[in-house]
Amino acid sequence: MESPTDSDVNEQQLVEQIVSGHARIRGELAKVIVGQNEVIEQILIALFAGGHCLITGAPGLAKTLLVKSIAQIFHLKFQRVQFTPDLMPADITGVEILQDSTEGRRLTFVHGPIFANMILADEINRTPPKTQAALLEAMQEHQVTVAGVRHPLPEPFFVLATQNPIEMEGTYPLPEAQLDRFMFNVVMDYLPEDDEVAVVTQTTARNPTPIQTLFTGADVMRFHDLVRKVPVAEDLVRYAVRLAAASRPRQTGTPDFVNEWVNWGAGLRAGQYLVLGAKVRALLHNRAHVTAEDIQALAAPTLRHRILLNYRAEAEGVTVDSLVERLMQTLGMGERRKVAV
Image 1 (tube, rainbow, N blue to C red):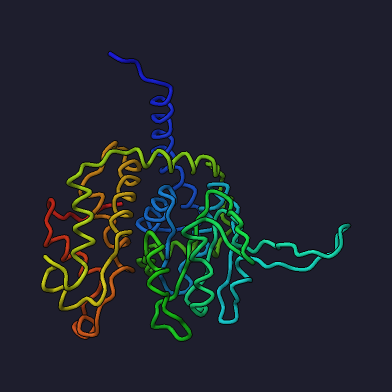
Image 2 (cartoon, rainbow, N blue to C red):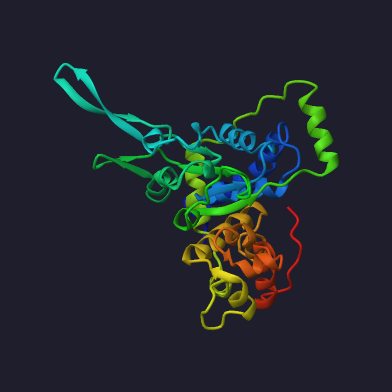
């Protein structure tokens, strides 16, 4: 029998660190965040997978507080950018300015707020698409280019963007190319009455207990490497690919209800993020392999911002989430169960 290598031991230690850390992270966040268990899990999955998150919800649901608290737990440099109609791309990426030096005047690059580990793009859909697009290169390449010069961003690098529901006044829909860069679209809804009572009681009684740092940015980078080593069966990868492909209208094998209700379906990134997110979820639930349930649990946050419904679907009251649920029922791959998180 072969003895485990140092690499195997280190990987096992990382797995144990993630599993035990998951509960500790929940405990720290519970100091300031009540409920929202599914939201927290989806954001943590994106963080461990190295993906970006779009958080959708009405004002006042603690979206900003949640993101800032997660940055504290992981000891990440945090920057908040308030997206407003007059925000310019240079206000995010940085700008070159003339400065006096011993060698005379020369252009010096002044870093913008995007040079941090965790960026909170607050109310991203309140700024025009030109400024929204300033994040595209950063999200994909982890760098920004100013005046032809590339400036690498610090690692790890995450963008967590919040947006108000599109029906609200003064909002601009995000371009499809930018939406596709987000791993998940996490929906943050109003709390049940008991949880809301707990929030009001907690926030009007005393200052919350300070959040403790549990990890570092180096830990997060090691988690990224570990996640990609989690095995996944080919039939599960094929299931994720078929789930994304089935959302595309007018393709071979597309269900009739998709052709009837969908203008645009999910692209290749959807399948990639479904599998990557499923690997993280398996680790968080102390499993060394991916199951169909992991993929099903992440189908809605992965697909809901990648599927564009048409007017007929809206008129008939069809939502993206209900369409994704029907897609999973159509494709099968095991009994669809309500996932507890």
